[in-house]
Amino acid sequence: MSKQVEFFFDFGSPASYLAWTQLPQIAAQAGAQINWRPMLLGGVFKATGNSSPIQVPAKGRYMLQDLGRFAKRYDVPLTFNPNFPINTLTLMRGAAGYLEDERFELYVKTVFEAMWVQRKDLADPQQIAQALTAAGFDPEEFVRLVADEAVKERLKANTEEAVKRGVFGAPSFFVGDELYFGQDRLDFVAEALAREPIATHSGS
Image (cartoon, rainbow, N blue to C red; front, top):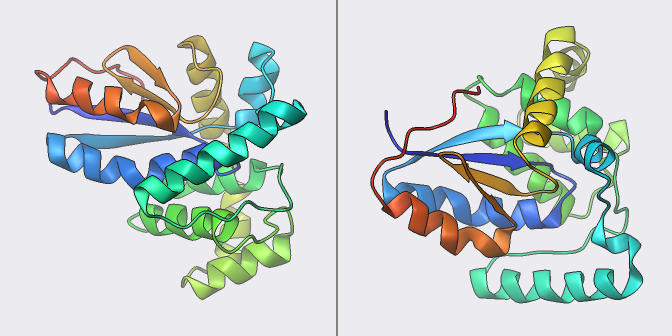
């Protein structure tokens, strides 16, 4: 079985956005595949008793500064979204729905950049539709997709599995059964992938 890294993410997490800008290169250098695992961060928070750092003013201020430092290090754009925190349920259902579609990575790129570069209010269905249309998606198809019960169940199952495996926030990564939390731990992910291939978790 080829090496892989599981990437549990939520579009509402700026740290997930930063991880997304770096993980494909890390995986490619290691000859590994990314197993994309969209989850609902709000559901993880509720199940684990965790909460967003932004709810602690001093921690929130530090987090914003630190994310800015990493964006500069990575040489990627990051503009904090004034609508944060945003309910990402619909967006994450979209990720679950497009997961096996050839347009999945385009969808991820579109939403991450709309959220953390263009500062769009993606709690607004009209702004979601505008961003998707500009990227070549059919917004009516998207509405049907996120209403599909199988899609809803996939996102729910991913979220429940994440909690069961010890995830408490986003982004979270697994190499084999080893959990790494936070985009600032990507160096550990790279080191783990550089080692011999590891038997990966059977979850899908």
